[in-house]
Length: 303
Image (cartoon, rainbow, N blue to C red; front, side, top):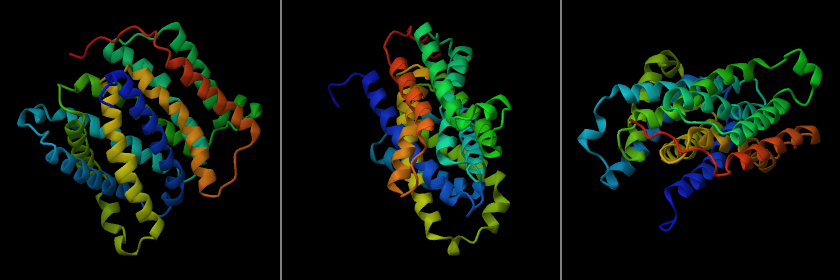
């Protein structure tokens, strides 16, 4: 990808990000009731930190100056730790496609926080795209049932996960706000270490009470997928993209997540969602296309 612009590389990074994140919904449902969310994610952050740290050492990216103002990593690590813990609490009861639709609400929230923190401007086209995407997400979340929507009948799992998505939406512009020129891999490592410490303190009782030697095999499969692909890899992809694209556009790729989840669900032998739900997913794809039109005003450079 040597001849590609940084912005185009950011788009490619987020395309891969959306596919890898989708796997965490399908696998997450399979493991959410087998292990405490805090214990699972503490192990996930630890494994991911080892992998990212090895990459950073191997590429000689570390500099002592990269770790000045360590409070920045605590802020980012806390936001992402909250997101993941609440995600797995939500997946105890939420359907994977429905949960992934909740995830697609993050671009709207990220656009708001991007303006608050960075004064990133949302154009009329982007606002229209966000509205279409949010409509598609709500269509899936309420399972194409108008009576459920008017009564605001949403599952407890989806509500819990939505709170986590607020943390994710804040995290995206905060990366750009707090980065001081550190390479993506180093910045990710600092965030993982801080997040792992927070999760270890928060979930110490769950970690101690987990029978690690007798966990079902699917938990270990899920853990290694989450650590390697849905953590270490996606964190670097997200960090890189947020440094080269506006926050709303970065999070626009979450609109592909329900589509990728359906692919995962089919691959795992699960039923395909009904045609009515596919209408909502189609709306999220339309929103992605609109958001990727390159007519946004340039974002203010981070200070």
